[in-house]
Image (cartoon, rainbow, N blue to C red; front, side, top):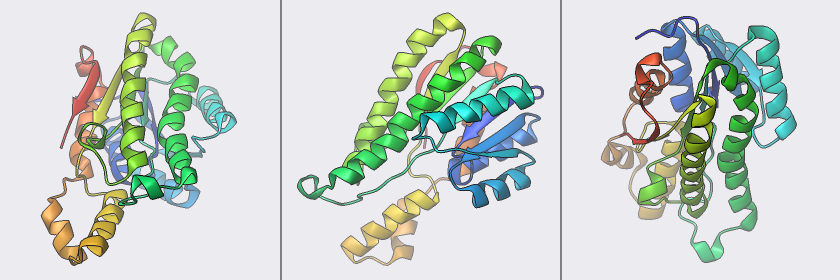
Length: 239
């Protein structure tokens, strides 16, 4: 399964699942654009993957629109959007103590960011009959250490289902992928908070979590944006 000839945008591609996916898509022949708010790490990830880097703030509509304009000017097309940008804040904070500003920050990145990326990518994807893949989390259905994170990923699920129905008429295929327990910097920060709360050592907490590799999820994402996954729509749970 190759991706030769496809132009694929990975938002949040500087690290974790996004970076692993960008590297795999590029290795399979795609022209890959990594977009991320972390310019230094993002540029490094792009260089390592043989991709190009564009800075973006997914909370800002003008920034997302500028990203899509740059892709159209440079490549003339977009075949797939993989929206992997996300944050987790407020792990193990009780709901009655949960700061409103933390709630809003998580919602702005995870839900509004996914909406803005999908919104501004859609005009390009209509031209190619392209694909949108949103990254949710098993936390959307199983709960989370963070009230805001679990709720935000539920919002991503709802957004994806709605887009799948509405954009099918435009020839755009939409999927939501819900990974769980993957070895990323975000997950390790949650494990560190858990270890501090429970008194476990960080190493023991990591071992007990039995984390999966980001590359495993990347294989699923790369397949979903390929022509081989043409019949796949909706939500997918992974490790």
